[in-house]
Length: 136
Image 1 (cartoon, rainbow, N blue to C red):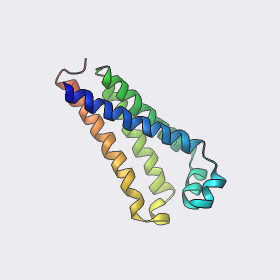
Image 2: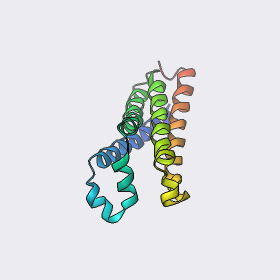
Image 3: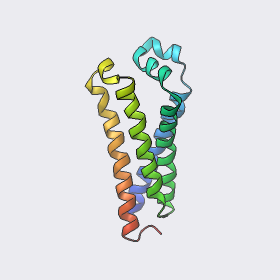
C-alpha cells in the first residue's frame, strides 16, 4: 500500500505542475513572450477557445483525478480519462492546427509525448487500482 501512496502523490504533484503551467500560459504577456519565442507566442495567440478548454480539461481533470485517487475513489479513472481526452485535443490542435513541428522541428514533440504517456499511465494505474479493490 505504501507504493500506492507514493505513486498517487507523484501523480498529484505532476498534475499540480500542469495547473501552474496552464495558469502561466493563459495569463502570459504575449508581446513579452514574442521577444524570446515568437512561434510559441503566435501559437498561444491563435489558439482557439476550444483548444484552451481542452488544455483546461487536461490539467484540471488530471488534478481532480489525482485527488480522487488519493481519496481512494474509483471514479478517479473517469477524470484521468477526461484529462487524456483534453491532452489529445489540445496537442492535436498544436501539432495539426497550428503546425508546431513545421515551425519548430520534431524536438517540440518530445515533451507533449511525455505528457501523453503520463496521462495514459495515470488512467491505466487508476483502472488497475479500481480492479484490484484499492479504490472504492
